[in-house]
Image (cartoon, rainbow, N blue to C red; front, side):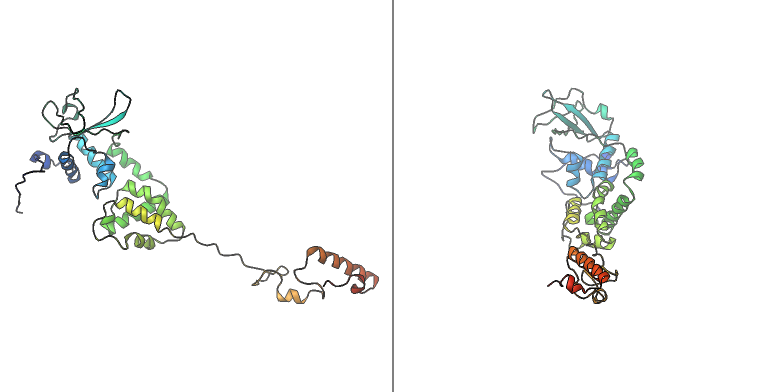
Amino acid sequence: MRIHRSAHQRFFTTLGNEVLRDNRLSFCARGILSHLLSLPNGQRGDIRTLADRTPEGRERVASALRELERFGYLRRAVKRTAEGRIYTEVDVFDAPGEPSSQAAPNTVIPGSGALAASANGDHLVKEQDEEPTLPAPPAHDADVGREGDGDVETRASAELLARVARAEPKLSMGRGEALRLAPLVTEWRRRGASDLHVIGSLTAGLPRGEVYHPVRFVETRLRSKLPAERSVAPSRLECDGCAVPVLVPGLCRTCRDVEPAGIRAGADFAQVRARGGAMARAALRGLSIDAVMPAPA
């Protein structure tokens, strides 16, 4: 391997080899540390902002930040101003060490654009937000909860999104993000979509370049391409007289043919009942039905 280096005149960051070669850190953590140290003082460095700038999902970014905290490269603390506003103070260091000894406890929070330094000369990167960004839970706690993430359908839908990410790296996402989008995939399946249908709808016609926000991209497609509700098959029509299948409501041809003459199919129930009673009384008296009640027009 041959290394080619350029002589930068501006816009560059100098890092020690003890940082870049710290094998305690993952490559993801080293990359995020390099990115944070290259930012001006006062920039945002929360999980959501970092995840939006990189193909890494929020879960991997959160894990990398926990690594940096564990080995003394980063410190996060929730504080409150005199006015009662809560913010998160983030300190980033370019040398490893204990988080508690990296900065003096009386370090003054600078204004926007000012440069702060700890007692030993390390530069600090701070962010102040309206709402606190609390440290993520320890890695072992997240691992313990993985087995119980959602029900069977939710886990199956999240696994399908993981298959999509493996098939198309542009749509990579973390496990937590897949679980958040899993209910949308479950709704696709409820509406009759197969796994191949879901995968094809998410991966077809991708942009030629990079997808900068894979999670948002997948969520938009899942919502905009959601299949229509499956129509319920109409119930089978049956004859009102003998229950055989018919094409139109009412009596079948056989039942219409055996009806007494003068009584029309579909006549008003009250008229049919009155005429039936008259026919019965006429039969007992030996009279013609037409003599008792004329046939309806």
